[in-house]
Image (cartoon, rainbow, N blue to C red; front, side, top):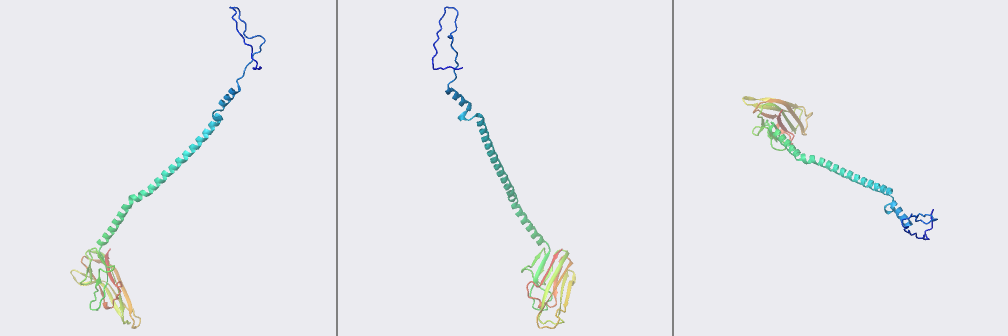
Length: 269
């Protein structure tokens, strides 16, 4: 129940009754009235219940959680990117390290291998000599060129320019070969030639024939034109130290003038 507060209530004074019995201060026949807080105070209480900036605490908590979730996602992505970059750098470093570590040694190994191969070749008895033009038939043992083109002598094998022989300095098995090419200007049915390889040994006055070939019938009919023929000999033979190996041709003046058409060589097996 409420009452209109615009009319003032009569003031009530308490008079000391001189120790007599006290009477109630409220005048009789007055109805009690309860007042309510003013509207301003009610608005303030409502604003306090809403929280900061008119947002309820529950909604503010949800928004804060969303912000935290977004920042956490961004931080996780940044961490993943940094991790991927570290892994890529590690892979690049692993790919570059073998080249840096083993580049120089590989070159050194290669140079050592080439050097060792050259040393093996130079220490292995071998020789290859090429033809030299002959002008007469009186000297059937051929002379050779040991320094031009592909000619060489290795491993102590020496070429004797005075007699045209290859001299070995080690006993063992050797592969000996020789090729000759002849050009007959007036070729006849009876034209022929002989090609042989022989060895001279110390203490043995007579030469020892190692290989020999007799060629005939290469001109099917008499002809005034030039006719070319060739012969190759090759075999593995036992040679002794200081043996000298030679090549004989029956008609050396017919030898081809082509520089590499005639050759002679040997190497130790």
